[in-house]
Length: 222
Image 1 (cartoon, rainbow, N blue to C red):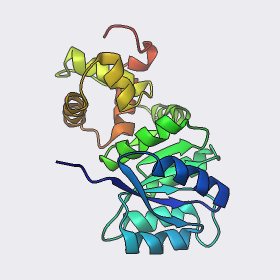
Image 2 (image 1 turned 90 degrees about the vertical axis):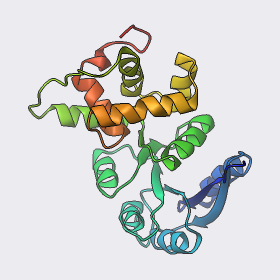
Image 3 (image 1 turned 30 degrees about the vertical axis):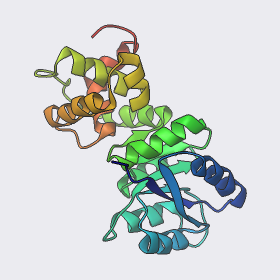
């Protein structure tokens, strides 16, 4: 049985950037671009008409910025997953975007393969953050007093996966590193979310950091 392609809305005020990304996505099996928007207001209107699975959202746009549009999209009756893609690696943008309901925050210097993987990742209901963003979220979180995270009940294999997530590896990179299938990895991640009472991937990263997994390189044994 064929799987329906991920429906993507592009929202960016730079036509050249939209054209470049659209060419990449149109050439990628499993992804289809359903609409393009140059403003935040236009993105919200087009999302209501086309019901995309994922909105690729710039931050700075005229007539309603990307963060305002993200909040409106995630509160809509048929909310898409929002992946913020921007050149501005600023704390205020990161925190506001995540509070608005964004599922991911990436920088525009991301490689094409990682962007494609990111779209599929958030479409599957997961969260995804650029490594620099993840580090700052961890630093902000751990600047507050918090108990060291205990990993009782987490299997060695799950700890291994959690360590790779903590270091910012994508699902495809984890699959290749551990030589496991996508379905097996999703099962392990689902169990980690339940065992660690985590809402999404960002909270798994924090849990891994609290458990000291960030101090071990990705290649070290659990």
